[in-house]
Length: 241
Image 1 (cartoon, rainbow, N blue to C red):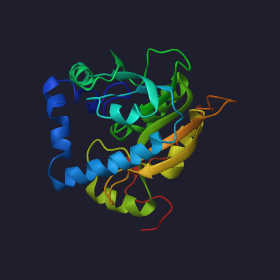
Image 2 (cartoon, rainbow, N blue to C red):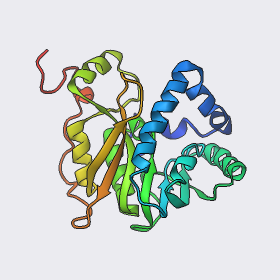
Image 3 (tube, rainbow, N blue to C red):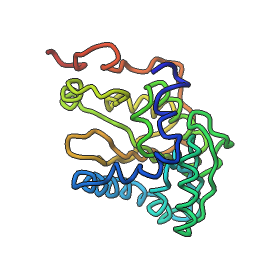
Image 4 (cartoon, rainbow, N blue to C red):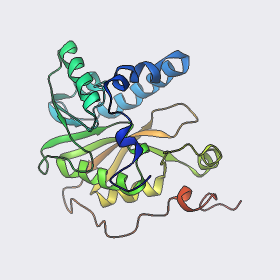
């Protein structure tokens, strides 16, 4: 990672050719199909908790693969993505599916919407690619533009899963401890209402539903984000090795 405004994930999905093969590469084979079923079940469970007739921002919308799930609750969907290639593919999907979606190019860190301009913001498979300070900024933006809440995936590990993760240490991976996610939510003026694991048993990604506070909507973000273990230590916090 170079800086909070420039990181590999932002440029990784720009080409249309990447969008064309994204789902095929991610969900092919028995493991891919299993991962797809887990994601569908977890994300679907969070979306089912939303009221009907809402306006939802899908950011990043990617190929538009979540619109069928979102349309079970949303009567209006806005899809935003930083990648022109993804947006082109998403537009084709919207036309094929008959789902009405407003699409625009935008960065999650600086959304071109007014405060509380949608009812909910939905985001899947984004934050795990972002440096922790960027995750904080993005969650605050999602909260700012949403009236009621946010459904967003995060990679959340326990102290036990941290030990497994630190041996693999995948590049450009930014999981959080649960207490760190609570801090990010509090700084964004959100309360964590529900969550469900949406990957394989050894994975750490969860779909999380946050409810927006109606008082002190944006929390105090002036403090320091709790230490991220993998940024400065190979030791699991709170445990002796």
